[in-house]
Amino acid sequence: MPEVRLEPEVRSAVVPMRRALRRASVVLRRDLPWVGHDDPWAIFVSEVMLQQTSTSRVMEPWRRFIAFYPTPASCARAPLSDILRLWQGLGYPRRAKSLHDAARTMVEDFAGAVPSAPEDLRRLPGVGPYTAHAVASFAFERRVAVVDTNVGRVLARALANRPLRAREAQHLAESLLPRSQVAAFNQAMLDLGAQHCTKVPKCAHCPVQRQCRWRREGGGDPAPASAGVSRPQAAFAGSDRQVRGRMMAVLGAGPVNRRTFARQLADVDPTRRERLLAQLVRDGLVRVGDQRVSLSGDDPSRH
Ligand code: SF4
Image 1 (cartoon, rainbow, N blue to C red):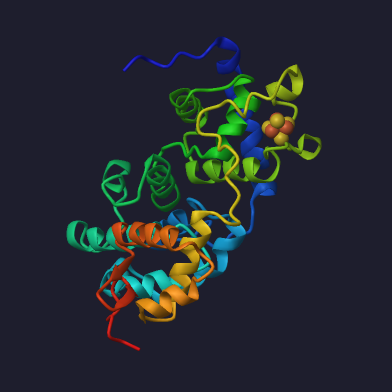
Image 2 (image 1 turned 180 degrees about the vertical axis):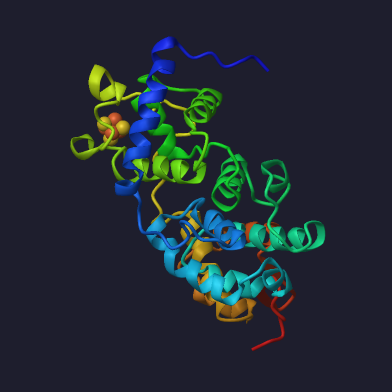
């Protein structure tokens, strides 16, 4: 793979930014229950929940989940339907199945523990590069950079003042890491991106504004064209995602016969309803029998 080369102005911005961020880390720190947590499983669960759900919506479900399933083994033993019920409100329920499958892999291949190496974490279902790095850093103090969409904006604006390709962003984030207290530093980057360097940046109170190249040099916002910086999502209201969520909520109350299921979703066009139900079956979240529809893991005959 070709080496990543960054221009001298970018490289010379690294050291001042590292110092400024370390100084600012305490004021930036958000009060999140999983930050500084000493249990890798609790951190793992938080990272899976945070993949596609905002921080404020994750807090309560995370607390509930950890109380119900305090270890990978307890999660692995539970039927998937129980995990899916606890997941309600978080959306994207395929993540619940991945989390359940990941817990089983931990039990079978890692003696019931969360693995610490990013390459082992990547072997778990539903774990991509971001989650693997986040868990390795926050749970095990591994020296790896955590680059999500928020951090991608900070890197493009504050250090490069140009759009970055994914490999450039990762390389730049790694060169920014301090030698020690890496988890706290990664957290400070996330906190900066979440609170100040937002989609519409709040530069006036940003603690690194003096070191920020975009703030100093001006020009168009380099963040939107950067790799890894999220694009606006399609509207939720009326979407397939919303209808699938309603289907999961209906089945969350327990197995139902097919006619009752159709009646509860009578406002949805039948062809669309069948198509979305088939997707849930393909994803392994729902089971459809001759008479009954149920969450995977539920006994279909249960009333
Ligand atoms: S000064 Fe503005 S653009 Fe620069 S890092 Fe802070 S919030 Fe982001």
